[in-house]
Image (cartoon, rainbow, N blue to C red; front, side):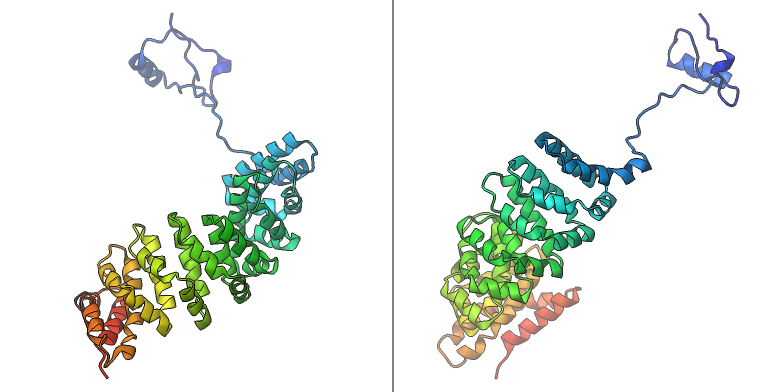
Length: 382
């Protein structure tokens, strides 16, 4: 049987769209198509795109569905919202401009744990855009998030609540709002009794404003962070050490950290397997060692020898922080001049001089300048 076509099956250019007949192989079909200039038949496939009308209507439809009393309807709506928001950043902006965050804030206190979990997930997605954060600050979402972060019935809800708080705290006004809502004391208590990486990281957002820093010191946050650095979780260690660096800005806070007995553990963590933990530990040592008592304790714990070894670390941040921390500890020379410990000081720091001479030739201007300043401090003589 050959091939045939009718007039109604021709294309706009009067060429046949399809060939009817028994196929005789790929090569034969290609020859027929080429000889008769017949276009191959293309099946319609779904592009996965939605209409512009749907894009404009979706935020309002989602918001209307959230007012439904049926639990299953709310769950399905929140799940669809999550997928919709993750599809494109513009969807988050358009959804934030609709009055949906107020009803989402109310759903954070819903009796159903799955609803609370999905609601916290949607809010964490909306908090990634400034429009969403602005709406949350207006309707008071932060207070509900602070309650959900202690939800004992749903671990995912706690994680999404912390993620949302961290995104809000990235903005200065967001950090201040968390502090004004009493978040500092609540986060310090959570870190003390059940420390997690999310809780420690959320507390760091509060420490970025002076009021939050003051509240944290009143709540004995340094003691809580000392408890956290006894953990073996690298994420908890990294953020807890960063919090100690923030908390020890004042002289009294440095002395409090020393009294809490955190220095031996921090010095040991400078040799941790994770470079993030090593860098955070070095920064914490440098912060506490600004005080004379901190320099003395770090020197006695062998921090200088560890830092000299870290000058050859493969990570640039660790090397730079080690150079600067050695510069802070090198100022202890003034306390050791003409004392029996002066020889110990020289023997400890002499090992750093060859490496610092090499680092002075670095192409990175910051590292080269830091190495030069540290070397000058070590070689200084009155």
